Image 1 (tube, rainbow, N blue to C red):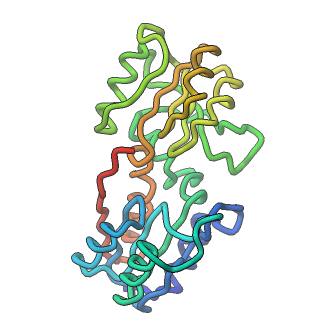
Image 2: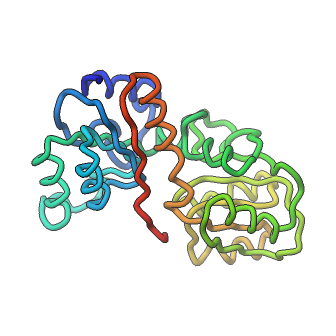
Image 3: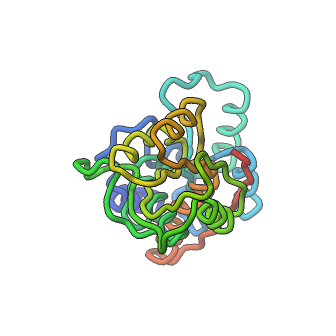
Length: 252
């Protein structure tokens, strides 16, 4: 068992959350009970995850996508009211880490995605930025684009969307989890063969076609399942508490 504030201090220190200018507050977003013995983690603090956490008798929920995003509706009504009522009414803590969890060199979404996909890491998509969100590196071996698409689908367990000639050979690749399709320009600027992210926008297709860089859209949720799992496991190993990851299916 660990006290809530001690867990917050450990997470903030490990993820260096104070270094980031983010789109939402990182850390403890909703305060619950003081003593924590069981943590449920998930990608997003949706109602289904909160309900599952109650079934598991969790003391805290740990997510990548929490609440209070810049520009969101400030009034407490609708689903926002229901979610907060679930947390507050059950004395349940909510911890959320966005960019700090994307960037962490071992536990982060991009580092964990590289491990899942057997990619070697050469550096950040922003070489001069120590907090570069995306990474670049190389495949374990040269593959055709079609083979890489199959590799991605096998490891991530979902159908992906590929823009490019399936017969082209690919060796170097950049990646950034989530909704980071705009970073394709950084990947192309580094001369990489392909770029991988979660989502795709209409302009992404034209950029890929006109510059020749391959693009693989693998799903926002599918690419960001791994960092929060690693962070929850880290907590469990360090403090001897229980951790349960719950994957609430999301096709996006």
